[in-house]
Image 1 (tube, rainbow, N blue to C red):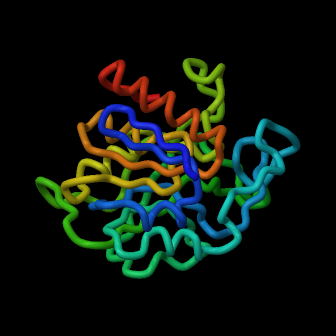
Image 2 (cartoon, rainbow, N blue to C red):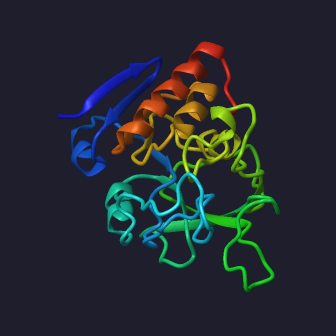
Length: 226
């Protein structure tokens, strides 16, 4: 049985999203950073290379292929980050490039280019904006060592900036936002900041607890960016 925590307009589940999703009553859009399906083994900063670090050698639940990602997105309007190494989710209608800034990543050290961009795949109906905008978002990634948060470290190896998730949350179909791969709760923080109802699901207990703390802080402080 899953643990369920309610904080403000957020309902947070600790458990397997594929087991919990059929029990949910109403979801209007998914905004998420799912497993990319690339069977990643983490390096020192969350990449593939490095001689040490806090996440070295860790793997990601559900990252063996895209089956978990695709099952969780099926039937929903979605904005989901991903890798060009794997096919996009079925029913993808738009590709948005996230320019993460030149400070990020190491990638293949034999190549002169850093992996400083990622994709977001967007599907379903109801996405909106006051005017049409370009398909490149320029928001610096959360640095590997942030002195003002978590004793100088990210809360999650692939933690996304709150502003990035707000970009999609504020353009999502009206109603309830779901993140079935909640991680450290960034989408939930974005929803708290923007006054959107949120459902989050996280399979790993340590990240579920971190997400609860961050979302609670967002409601307590009125707006949270870290």
